[in-house]
Image 1 (tube, rainbow, N blue to C red):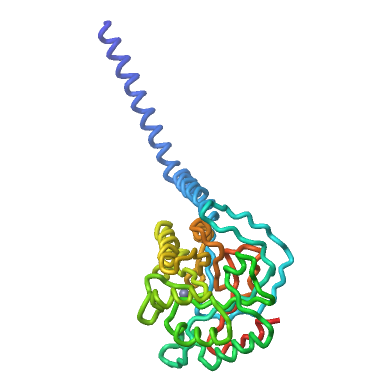
Image 2 (image 1 turned 30 degrees about the vertical axis):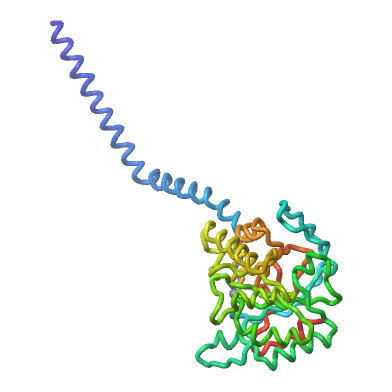
Length: 313
Ligand SMILES: [Zn+2]
């Protein structure tokens, strides 16, 4: 009698338990695999997106077209004055208050007589010797005086300053532009790629001679990479080591930097600032506002056939 009762209870409750388990399993499976499952996936995805978006927003990639576009002529007059409080460490030289708020900075590449239909980019980036000579004479005739970034830093900017910048440190700068500039008592800034010295590029001896003669030497990385897509470690190396290499050659601080192909991001700009540079130039077309962000300076591109007269007021 007792045993029968126990058996009855076990079978009844056991069956009920198994049945309810089955029911639960079927009902959850039914609904979950339809709507809930999709909702769940959607929630997971949106969580991931939500997490990722602020990180992306923190590092805006600023890319500009290099080697292709003619500069847009802009006579921007600074209406808003931004005070830049730079992080100054013991090593970093302190900037003087700029005497002039806007300076035209011209961007040159090759100075050579070069016209190759098979090399359209090379041809476009080359200003012939006669054109270059005429341009330098025009600048002088308009009463403009060549300056360097060191002049801004030291507070020794001349009246009507203009900065002539030459990217990549080609040997033809030394052979062709340098004598034309020297003859006229003009100076310029050369941006050197430290992994490319000698051959088609200037040698260490030539770079030192320029620096000793009052021509400024700026850095243009070690290997001319796209810094906006380079890893943080790679960008840091390219920015800091090129500076150190040039400083060892010229025996002076290197204060100016040029983003290769004008490509950079906020993180790259910060790295350039932290490395101890004071000025960085882009390929954004226009007059440079030196009272604004000195790490995003605009320039006027001078290519083959460019009429520079429009860059001077
Ligand atoms: Zn370059």
